[in-house]
Length: 320
Ligand code: MRU
Image (cartoon, rainbow, N blue to C red; front, side, top):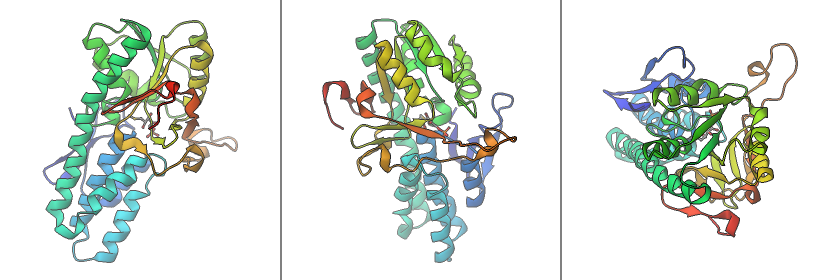
């Protein structure tokens, strides 16, 4: 199943806010509704956001035909709906570059963004599984963070696609999924996807991850990214940095799996990235709160970046 697609003139997507209780498909025909779906995390995860951004521009081209100012406003609203994952603005801008050629051309470009993410997922699965077996032996046990499966990437996923590939090879010895606070993308979404795939797993609270690594409970940390900066700094779901520190201390690889569409050579380092703050309400109704959605893992803690085209060994001084 594709978790986001263009079907009969509308964007159809799995409403990730309803999982794991209900599997609901949302059918979206208006740009404002797509922006709302992005902001509420009904659709989320960097590659899926890139596809949503591109489809959003296709919706805008149709909705605002003959209204150039309205169209420009709608395209901008899609681009900036969330700030951190580079894929969203990138997907929207790719589709927007075709606006001069008509609605069908915009839609064709958006479908190309979708198809490229599907192909990237398959390629990353193989490159990542090969690398994990090289680094950790034939049957690795992995710890993963946030949700990097099909929900985040149309089909397959990024880091979770590697987990699926290891399972397909009969080479997966265990999965720990961190729950991922505050919105539980791990406990709600990764757990749901792994259960659907028939893969055994254990959920750990986020703060347990580094301790479990120190006890030798996993052979590698493997997760995705929302943006990989030119210097190799990795921007990903908050909690990633703590897992990178835990991996370094435990002496296990910390492997980041993300498509080339997430590698941003225009952003020099993590300090240059806007980290989304999702407000206090998601954390607690009772007191003030700070709620950064992402954090930055410095490049010196990253063993390797696996994309759909290459394995970049940052630990050996290789550059993006
Ligand atoms: O806030 P989210 O749920 O959109 O954050 C998603 C993540 O941080 C994922 O780890 C990242 O996008 C990689 S998805 C394949």
